Image (tube, rainbow, N blue to C red; front, top):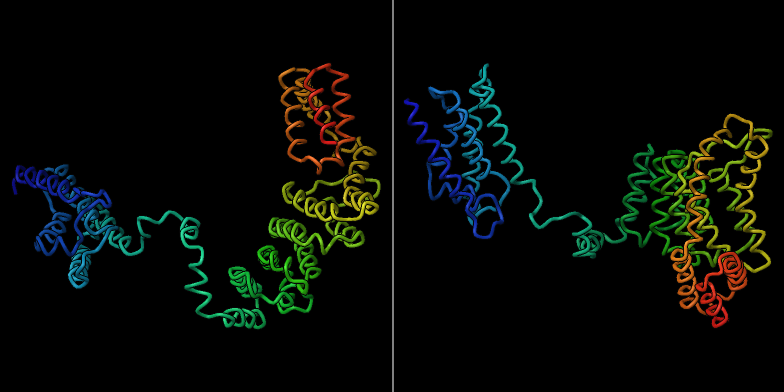
Length: 436
């Protein structure tokens, strides 16, 4: 076949590609489905497949035609809408699959020609597979879809099974022979945070307790407790003590640190009224200290804490929320029980400063010098005015709620005025007098 003929074929393919890609709504790369194209031009798809194995006088020309035919087939058979006639679409897709299979021997031929056909066949087959597995074009992500219809899961899934869903999962936990099975059941329970019997999860005799030696099960169990925090808050009979004990146990495993710390904070925030007892707070702080601030060995400097700072802060914030509801006479003792482990670690570092683990003064000196430069900004009038404006607006917003802080704030602003003689401090003092 003459090389000039392939030039005409190449031009015709370019025109065909442009025509197929014309779309009034720009919703797809091709405006025609496989069935529609086969019905209007029955021989077109078979001709395109025949070009994948074509040979030409000029290898470059053959490669261009082959690649262009492959692109057109991917456009037609790739992701996109189907036509209204299912049988017509099925016939066209079956014909395309048969054409791909007919190229098998050519694709397996050694040499560049066989490799080129193999690449084209793989591309078309991949496009054809994606046509069925791709999500809708309006799909963004699962969170966006959930925002559009928050009740979709409960309407389409859970309400079709009701309590039988939970019963089946509880039976799976009871019959589990490996931690993976128990973890999977707990994960499914977390998806319907509404009707779980807390005793099955939070009691030491619960059916899932035997698997809590696995960090993966602990992480999932902690996530379940966090998901059920609203239920613990509104249900007086909920096993809150067992849930907290489970979370503190989960702090023993690095894999479950994050889930346990978050759940512990949420549970303390929501159930603070049920926990506002000094002995309870102090016992929780004593157990949590082993992970948050482990005590140093006698005569040695405190070791490095492996738990991330974010997780340690979450635990302390949860305990601090409970302390705010204690009686005034218990607040000091309970606050000290939280700070005592940190003070002990600090004292060990001070007492054993010559230890290798406590060295690093040169780096700390550079940091302190940098901070000293930053603190000098307080002498800047604009910075001081901005700080005083924050104080003033906070007082105006809090009003009566800020009275417990007025004495401390009055002393601090007074000392700041004595040191700087800035008029902005007087505005804060006048606001303090107004609130008081």
